[in-house]
Image (tube, rainbow, N blue to C red):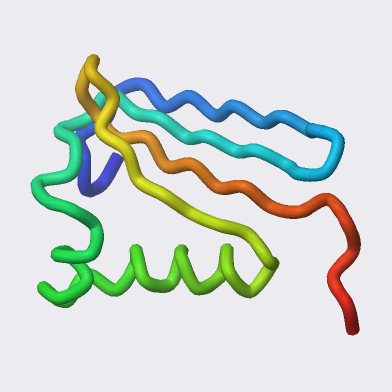
Length: 83
């Protein structure tokens, strides 16, 4: 809401056989550029999000839905992490 001016935010979670899929989508302004370019411009929130996902053995990606806004998709393994 703070950055995107979103009015509607949707969270979708699926527990699949070997992974947990999480998609968060808003109807805001969308990303002005690719997330990798934002990191270089001093926007470290995206870097932190990606590092936390990787720390849990998952992946994180950012998408621009055709309807506008932003979608963040995280996929995590369902198996317990070692240690």
